[in-house]
Each structure stands twice: as C-alpha cells, then as structure tokens.
Image (cartoon, rainbow, N blue to C red; front, side, top):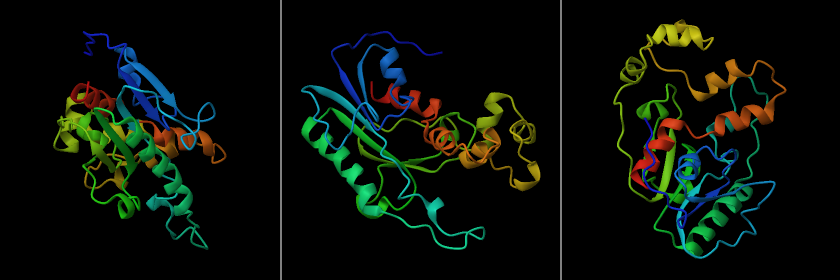
Length: 224
C-alpha cells in the first residue's frame, strides 16, 4: 500500500514531455510541486526552468530512435528517421537539466538508437521487474538512485499477482502458443489487443508511452 507521510510543497519536480503525468503522479499525490512540461501547453524547446528545482523526469519522444522504425517483412520500404529532430528535443531536455541543476535527474527512452548519442545507460529495465506484467526494454540515463527490483523472473512477477502465465495471456487476447517460453507479452502486444482499430494511432502511441505504475512508484520511493 502506498504511504505518503510528508508533504514537500516546496520541492519542484519538472516532468519534461510528461504526457499524462503517469511518471510524476506519485510526486503530485505526495504533495510535491509537480509541473508537467508537455504539449500543447508547454514546449521544452523554449522552456526556461524556475529556480530551486528538486528533481527532473524527462521522457522525450522515442519515435526517431525506436527499433520499431526498422524495416520488417510487412514493409515495402524502410521507414525514414529524422534523428536531428529527435535529438533536438533530447538536447533541450538536457539544456533544462543543466540550467536547473537539480538534486537528481533522469531521462528515459525505450532501448534504441538514443544509445548512440548518450552512451551507456545508467539503468536498463523491464516493467515486470517492478510488478507490471509486460515487457518493454527501457533505458534510463541520469544522476539518480536506482530503485531496487522486485522480481528477477517474469514468472515470479505473475506468481505475485496470482495469475498463471497462460491464463494471463488468454485474458489479454494473446494466444499462449506464440509464447512457448512463457514470456510475458510486450507493450506492443498489449497495444494491439487493447486497440482493435488501426486508425487510433495517437491513442495507441500514448498507451505505449505511459510509464508503468510499478516502476513509477519504485522510482519515487528511491528518489523522494
């Protein structure tokens, strides 16, 4: 059970490219001064941070860095990338971090081409390690306290939820036969079963980008 014992109204948390605010939700509920710097209300490219920022969460769009943009058997041509546009947002997140000089900061992106520009991540994790039953290999860079993992295997994660692997997959509309090694579904698998209509591109993109609740809580506990 979550427990918020102290109100930190004087501690400013910037949630850069925060979208729904899922990553900063626990900070907001604990009483921190959370500011979600996301479109359409804010643009990180022009944003100037206030004084006395305590922590910064940054989740720049992964579109240009994603491995999903590679050509597969369903595509006639290779999708084009605009790494310059992708790095523009990343660089402005880093600019804000440099100006604010917070107590801690972290920048997140799914495992992909961003490693070419930022180097080795501080942490790479899957959501199931923190109790969210799906896979999504995710990189974190920054200066922060690494949250301790809860589970070392996917089976342990599901066992904690009291759900047999095959039953969980069937419940998500995914055939267990495509998971012969009892692997949990990916966030992309859940995307396909949650949104049946291919036209819902923006909704599907937002769904894939939401920070898993288990990890968000673990990060908050380690970096409160």
